[in-house]
Amino acid sequence: MKKQKNKVWGERVGKSTSALLQQVNASIDVDKRMYKEDIEASIVHCQMLSKQKIITSPVAKKIIYGLKKIKSEIDKNKFQFKKEHEDIHLNIEKRLFDIIGDNAGYLHAARSRNDQVVTDFKIWVRNSVKIIDGNLTGLIKSFLKKAEMHMDVIMPGFTHFKNAQPVLFSHYLLAYVEMFKRDKIRIKNFLSTIDESPLGSAALAGTSIKIDRKYTATKLGFKKPTENSIDSVSDRDFAAEFLFICSLCSVHLSRLSEEIILWNSDVINFIKIKDSLLTGSSIMPQKKNPDSAELIRGKTGKIFGQLFNLLTTLKGLPLAYFKDLQEDKESVFSTFDNLNLNLQLAKELIDGITPNKEKMFEAASMGFTTATDFADYLVKKGLPFREAHKKSAKLVNYAEKNNLNLEDVDLDVIKKIDKSIDQSVLKVFDITHSVNQKKSYGGTSSANVMKTIKKYKKLFK
Ligand code: ARG
Picture 1 (cartoon, protein in one colour):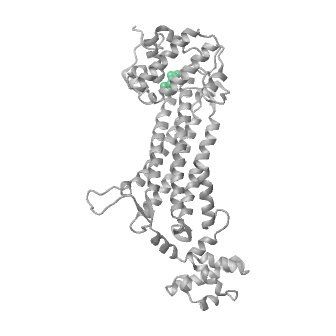
Picture 2: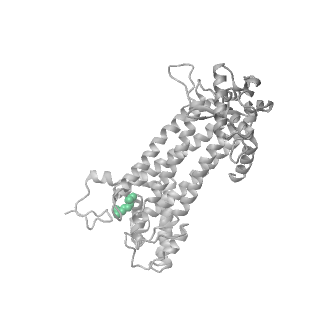
Picture 3: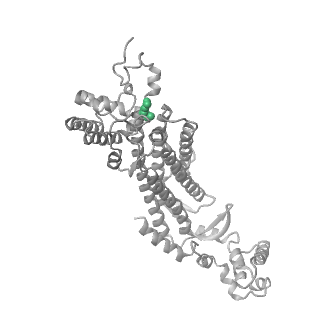
């Protein structure tokens, strides 16, 4: 029987691998993206083996020399990745043998690809989530800038997509800032949850070789080593959580996109979008379409899909390592790519929109949006709110019947609604006044909004 000399496990597995299995098994096309993390972790592992006198210092030096050379080869696109060597770990190991000879064989003491892959992947996710965090800050800054530029713009706030109450456009934008701020907090918490190094868990049981896991954990930037070797090699919670964080952030982006698409419609016409963020139609000469926002919304589906992809892979999977887990990286990598593009494009979109101030103000005056202000006026005069609500509804009914806005109803008519009403009621129907009276904490008054912008400009530098 022909031995598979070329395989690290070729001594044991007799027949050469079926071409089909080789194709399905090879993950190199995907996991080569972790070459930096793999080499970083291997160098630290090697330094630890040398410190613990498990390997000699000259051997360690050779190994580290070889690993650095491999990194520079890959950096320069001079490395030949081979499917027959399955994954990034074995591709690098094989090349290490080419460069330094049999001394390369000392590196794999006290580790397995099982702890190797999860260590690499955790480091990759940790670095990547920080890039997402940076892009979130960039987007938030654009919101703050836009809000500050258009402090005087008033628009209708909606519930059920019916005009509800007038709000500042800037306040509306800051609502999105809150969502992205929460995404950043989620990332911060995530970074502290995943702060444990799995390296040294080996295949699943740990090792009898006297390694120093605290040393490798610290050197790789983790707070401490993981507690249980079995969990360490089977845990992909961090990948699922990463995908959830990305999914929720995508929910926020897709809600924003939807608003932009609606606002940009000819029917609503609340904003203008810069031409560079629009596309045309191949048949309708007049068209300018907000594809940028539509694509952000569209890619959200893909991102959710990857979360469910991984959750389904993990569901019911016994301990510890199974090859199923190899499928985790594609989900995470593609989600990272899509979300990053989406975040950057969303930033361009926010930079590229101009509110149509007149149109927004006009819309804010439609639909009796100060009816609650009138009810509140009556409450301040001593009426129970439920009664005030009824009286205000009566005024709305009158205005609607007579085809008037609330501010156009005759003072004498209004006065008849309740004896407490005097001349001062008239300002209640003024949209700008309405907005600026909303001084409760977190309300839409310009004083509040300006304070928040100032605070957040310091927070998101
Ligand atoms: N390429 C593998 C993965 O991504 C590495 C771990 C392989 N371990 C094993 N026991 N075959 O999961």
